[in-house]
Image (cartoon, rainbow, N blue to C red; front, side, top):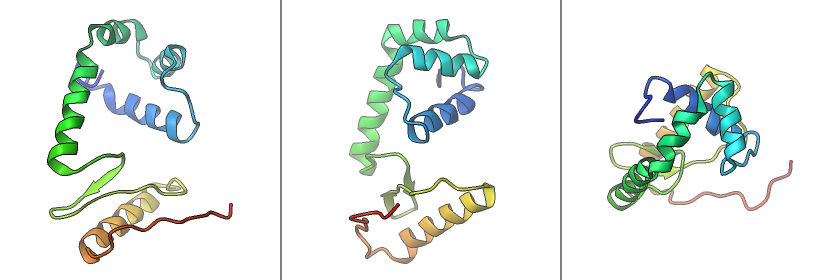
Length: 127
């Protein structure tokens, strides 16, 4: 989909991300993917025909392998500056565009402004 329908990909990518990370959807299930594509105005049949060729998986595998090897990137989202990279997971999704922008700016500021911070992880969460 990314390579065959690039103009439609951003909407589907966002929907896939939301389905997986906000709703806990099982994206390995064809019925889930078909419903998601359909809900976003995309005919799922051509997408699954392309998937069956193996090309999309090969492309993604090769790109992932190169990124992991060359940039030491291993997760999404990984934030990158000129000299630093970090995988980041926020507990709460931003509430709006301004909140999202503040979150990204704060992460980038930590990457460049405090490079000696190597790992920071909460061990328990009271929620």
